[in-house]
Image (cartoon, rainbow, N blue to C red; front, side):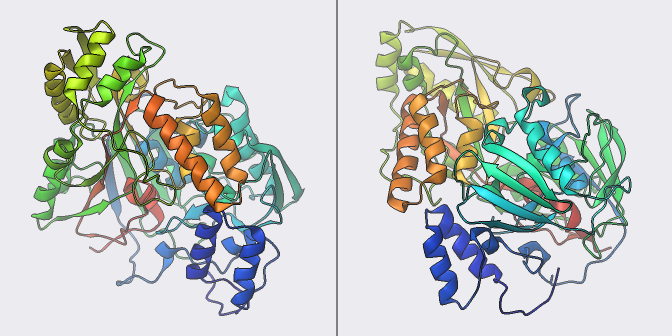
Amino acid sequence: MSDSKDSSLIGAEQSAGVFEALNRGMSRRDAMRLLGGAGLMASGVGSLLGSAGSVFAADAPAAATPKRGGKIRVASTSTSTADTLDPARGAHSTDYARHNIFYNGLTAFDTKLIPQMALALSFDTNDAQVWTVKLRKDVTFHDGKPFTSADVVYSLLRHKDPITGSKVKPLADQFAEVKATAPNEVQISLTSPNTELPAVLAISHFLIIPDGTKAFDTANGTGPFKCAEFKPGVRTLAVRNDHYFKPGKPYLDEIELIGIGDEPSRVNALLAGDVQLINSVNPRSAKQVEASSVAKIQSTNTGTYTNLIMRLPQAPFNDPNVVEAMKLLFDREQILKSVFLGYGVIGNDQPIMPGSPYYFEGLPQRAYDPEKAKFLLAKAGLAGARLPIVTSSSPDGANEMAVVVQQAAKLAGLNLNVNRVSADGYWDTHWMKDPLGFGSVNARPTANILLSQFFKSDAAWNESGWKNDQFDQLLVQSRAERDEAKRKQMYADMQTLIHDHSGISLPMFVSTIDGYSSKLMGYESIPIGGFMGYSFAEYVWLDA
């Protein structure tokens, strides 16, 4: 990163403030006025997002000098034969972490979730619909091939092809055209304006792969580590990329990524020194880790949540009375206190967390009401019925939440049979397949990205199978709306629609809790999920 003091460059604090204002609906004219008041020049809105002089917060000088060398083992919550090295198909935290070890994106998030330049040098636009992206010239892939605009064009457009199986196809569908305008320059034209494009392209699914890549038995990226071994369902072994374009990085020699589905076993492995980093620590275990002298806890409110999923296309959840009844069975205060020990924030059956820019405070909080649930279940003809509810330790707190809702269901005259299944393979075998079960959604950097991936009618991860034309229209329109009041109302309407009609019950937002060795340094929070926003690999080092 450059240490230039050129006054024409925008500082991190100004960049953060203006980008956040744009996301709230600031017009380009107002953005230019704000820059002009600071005595700065910009050719377009994208200039707010930096040049080579941008400062990624995680790159700021650390309290201790990083040391090179050493190997760490990292244990995540899940591993299966569906593990992938294809960023487009990443489905959970283990995939996201793995992909960030081997690949880079055009942008990357800092600790305030402001997208900073990575493989891109700048984003420029006059209307938030047509963007010119200038690329770095000093980057090579692990096989020695130079990084060029052709790689960006291929990497972005492949998400639009259904055959790819991209988890972010609803986001990629806004790419009207992506073309190379020079060896190190790309023009991205959108179907409609979207001021959030640099943030969209910072999520792990949009990491860049070489032009024409079809096979993913190994990883050929530009990232801080090279792939030495990849055995789906077993482990991933990464070795340092000595030709990484960020000087001095990475610090570690090797990273071994494994899956340990059982949370107590993950914690025990950390405390025993068998692994140096774990995610999804249970709040009760967090107290145990904090009391030790060998490990530490990193807790972050990110907007991550564990939710009950009712598949609307399947009986009995095709009856709105049943869906509403299930939502009334969650005693949210009890769940926050007894299940998560206060590590979280109460939710209201919609996915935007309190305190977020577009959170709708005017939406009435759904109360715990087993009597009303009993009435609705009788109306649906389910009085005294038995229903299976599938749960696992893989979604944080799901097993405990299942017991809480099972007890409440008894008061409503419903018998819920809790079916606990193995964490191994849960996401492939049960998630979005069982009529009634649990999910766990990692935080997303913006409300529009989250809603696009999990609630748009054609989204690959539309968990409950909910389809609503009004919601879909509002979602697309909100990306281009520059009037802040109108945009906030659109998000309020979308939250109301989800709260009232979707098939998910979201009782609370769960704090993301990671555990790491006291010898592991440089570990911070990037609040889109655990593992330092899945990008820990290039920032941490061993002080031993």
